[in-house]
Amino acid sequence: MPATKHDYGDTLGTLTQHNFEFLRKLWDPESTLKRDLLSIPDENQLRRVLKDLYHIIVDDDVRIVILDIENCSIKKFVENPQNEKFYALVLPPKPRAFPQNREYQKMQGWNAAHYHAINDSYGM
Image 1 (cartoon, rainbow, N blue to C red):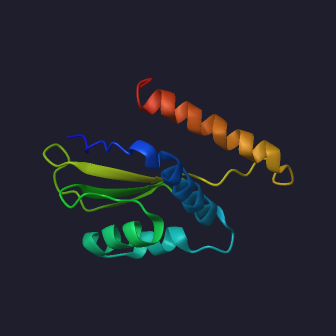
Image 2 (image 1 turned 120 degrees about the vertical axis):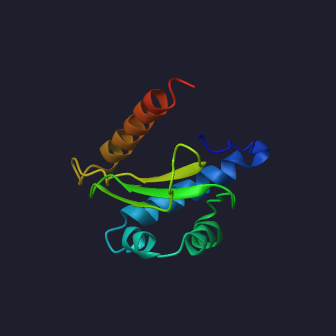
């Protein structure tokens, strides 16, 4: 069952900046964000952390699944995904090609984002 889609209206730019900061922290070599998120044992606590620290709001009636692409791991609180709404928080792998070239890393990230936006959303 698909999760709800919010109408962000005029706050889309702010939301984009929050998402950028989330990824910046996720990809920071000194950060423990990924490990911290995956170690939270309670879904409601995870929901509060996502909202308070990262401005990611997941409605109370929507279950959470965390997908760590880089380490091929999953943390789920969903019991029956066919009958429950759920939000998949995808933790993308850190771009690693040509680490000395910052512009190439940015381009690589945008290319991956475009690919997933087109393919995972069926072009919508």
